[in-house]
Image 1 (spheres, rainbow, N blue to C red):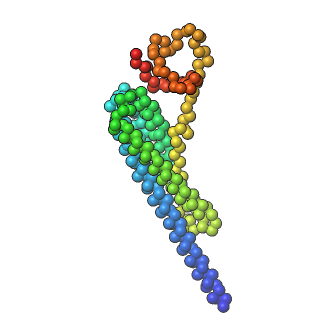
Image 2: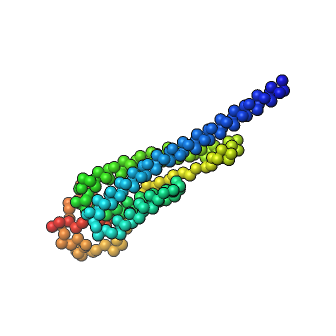
Image 3: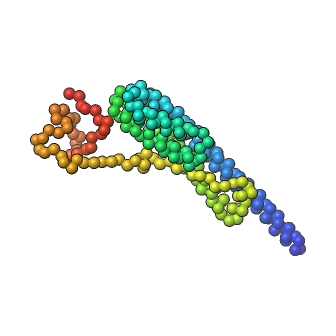
Length: 224
C-alpha cells in the first residue's frame, strides 16, 4: 500500500512537471507570436513614413533639417535585432520626429490637399491603432509569462525549460511625451500701438471667441 501511495505521488509530480513545463513553453511561444505581429505592423509603419517623407519632400524641399531627422529616426527604428525595450525607444524617437514633420506640413496648404498625402496619413493612423491593439495583447501575454516565471513552484521549472522573463513593449503617444507649450507676452502693445498684424486684414473671429489665441509657428500671413 505504501509503495502504491508513493507511486501515485511520483506519478502526480511527473504529470505536474510536464504540464507546467509545456505551459511555460506555450506561453513563451505565444509571446513570440505576439511580438511577431507587432513587428509586422512596425514594418508597415516604417514603409508608410518613408512614403510620407517623400511626399513632403516634393512640397517642402527646404525643410531639410526636419526631413533628415525623420529619415534618421526611421533608419534607427528599422535596425534589425532590436529587443522590445530597444524598439520602444527607437519608435518613440520616430514618433517625435513625425510630430515635427506634421507640424511642417501644416504650413503647406497644397501638401495638405494632396490626395496621396491624405491617404498616407489615414493609413498611418490606422496602422498606429493596430500597433496599439497588438501591443496591449503582447504586454498581457508578457505579464502572464513573467508571473509564471517568478512564481513558486513554476520558477523552479523555468530554468531547465530555458524560459526567462520577457520585456514589455511601451509606446507612448506623442502628446504624452511632448506637452504643448503656451506663453503669453508679458508686455502687450499699448492701445493704439501697432501690433505684429498692422496693415493686414485678419479673418473674422468665431462666434463666442474673445480670448487671445497663441499664433501657430506655421501660420501663413493672410492674403490681402
